[in-house]
Amino acid sequence: MTLLPEIPPRQGARRRDRHGRGIRGPLLAPTLPAWRTRSEKFDQLVASTAARLVRGNPSLTGVEFGIEEIPPSNPSPWEHASVVVGRYFPADRTSGVAARIVVYRRPLLTRAQDAAELAELVRMVLAEQAAEMLGVRPDQVDPDYPDED
Image (cartoon, rainbow, N blue to C red; front, side):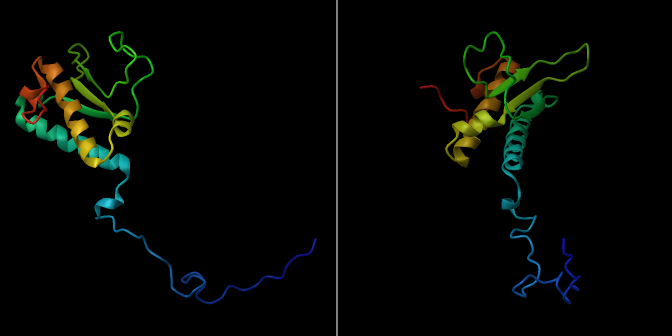
């Protein structure tokens, strides 16, 4: 086994790359929208949609909105062979847990062709789950809910 002699580092070798341009910085500034990840963009979409629903319906003020990647593998008995995109969990007064509406990110992302369709799907899912919680029709929760024709 031969040992190579130690070669002293070049001056400025750490500050510059091999072409002498220097260390490259990030391509996008953290303040730009493209800096966020896809899941962060989805979280922001759900949060803004939920905030709009709560502003329009004061009875939704204490409701917690959540996001999960995928639905659990054990579906409820009434969910026959369908993929769940959102779910409403009623409040439990004995343990102090508030009512929750959960949106599942992956099933919604696979159904949407683009960002506009994803925003529409998120709005519809949140309106349907909130309507189920309140015992009303979805168009009473969200006036922009599409008519069923």
